[in-house]
Structure formats: structure tokens, C-alpha cells
Image (cartoon, rainbow, N blue to C red; front, side):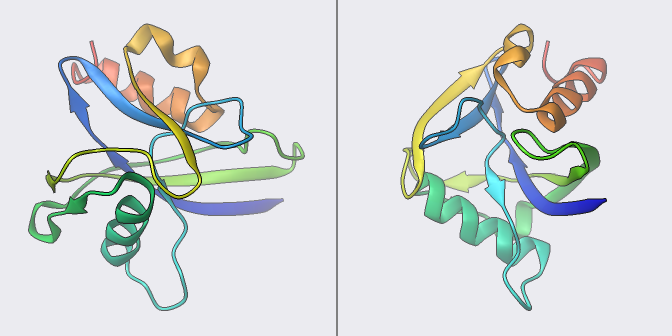
Length: 132
């Protein structure tokens, strides 16, 4: 079993969660990415969000939400993804950059457009009343 270790930024506005679709991908993902060597979760999250969405995450506002695991979408069945999720405030205007082809603000019932691990996150947010 192989594990892909990723970080994600949860941003909810008006009952919708921010998602992004990379070029040549068929599903939306909660934005984030992988750590580079020596990076903390916070450093990696700030860098990934800056690269993908052109906004600055406020370091002092980052707080842990949860960690979720599921089969990695588009990979062999023995490949899992672990997504460690954080809430944080941001500065700037969210817009697609780098490998991001489009962004979408999805409602809870639009979860079929997302990856396996994101479906778990949508469910948890919904169960906690954060994503109605």
C-alpha cells in the first residue's frame, strides 16, 4: 500500500466550499498539495495556496480541522491519499493559477464532482453543520 500525504485548505463562503480542478483532471479537489523537503504543514499550505490560487494565507489564522484517508482518485487501488485539512484566513482575490484550470464553489450535494477523500471531508463538514 502506498500513501500520498497531502494538505488541504478549507474555505467555505455562503454555504459553498472552494474547490479546484487541475488541468487534465476530471474531478474537483479541495485546494492544497504536498510538502517539499523540510516544510512544515503551515509552510507547505501557504506555498501551495499562493501557487494555485494567488492568495496569501494568514499564518496566524491557520487551524487544524481533521485528517482523512481514502483511495487516491485516478490511481491504482492500492494507492491511498491522506489529507490533513486546515482552515485559515486569506488576503487577496482567489483566482486560478499554475496547474489549476478552474475553481468552483460547490454545495454539499455537488460532492459527486470531487475525489474520494474530498467526499469524506464534505460529509464531515456537513455532519458538523459547516457545509449545509
